[in-house]
Length: 480
Ligand SMILES: [Cu+2]
Image (cartoon, rainbow, N blue to C red; front, top):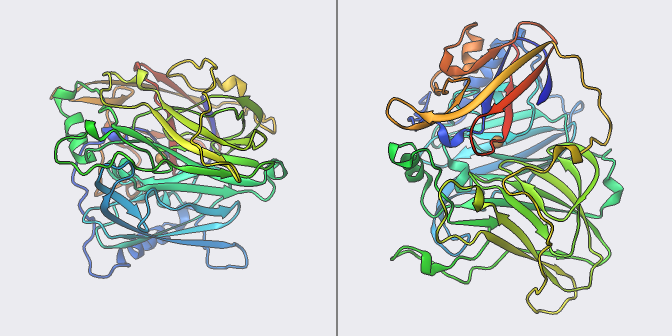
């Protein structure tokens, strides 16, 4: 349950139903030979609607520190776990490079789409207050960035913590179109309690391309069961038993694991991000307790765990002390395959990486896993997590109940439903454009909730009627 302060009229909620979006063509909303015209078109539309928005003019660099990143999106062959297939690359890297800034900065992400299909970049967890059009959700806040066009996202970051950026077009992120987004806070209360930072990206990994998987999933034959992953990765690496690979595939069973180097005596802030399509993991480092200090941008009181469950799109910061004998240890990311509807075959659910102390010998790790019991398929108990600074819960003006379930439609294809309505993407006329055009009533299949009063405090009550866990996230808040 979340309490949200929302200034004005309309806000839109979308769950993590990326895999359930109809596989509609995301054809370009504009065709033009000028690569910048698409960005200009949106800028112009936003500028026309100044009266609705506290439109941020970021051009005065004295007022804001601007941090710019250029990201070039391509597709090419790569073998993260030794199995070669086509993946999405960000600046030629898999997963994408980190984007980092300080709290209060204006972040500029210049995207060059070198694909033969549309894409968008969503900054996951960033509130986009005053700049909802830069949320990067096709059909909600923009059309897709057409092939071979550029688009710039520009927004002020008034929050801190561990986030990630990813494509919000179809299932591109499940094939590598993602990277970490880290917002540093010069006033972080834990700043002096660690020496260095390490980013850990966890993800499930499929050897079949997502268009094929999505087509199978959105057919009656799947009966709504999600495809099981073939593997999992830590920072884009793992090995794979190639005897499981189909005949004729290019596969090397000796792909290297990810390595993390520690210096004895130092304290590390590990920022752990689960960028999976489907899998929950239990994260641990043998012999090294994890002190949770941040949950998705919220600084918490220290809470020590040995095994950390992390669901899709969740992020945690943990402090780890390098105070154990100088050798190598296993980092473990245990895929919770017990939560899958259909049992996974040919899957090694234990994904490993190597944590090694500087100056240790070359022997492989011989460490043993923590034996603490962690309940399967259940999130970390929220009661154990206390905000660093206690916060007062505001008085609630209105409650919105959202019931989530999954059921077959008239074609016997299982879809996700919010209050019995399945969302239908309108890629050519995104919700935000409709708001610009003065639309006040939305079709039922838009799952829009209209708030009438300025400054309303809303309780959103999520009721999950499905057997599986479903993390939710607030994509954007639109004020009209
Ligand atoms: Cu996201």
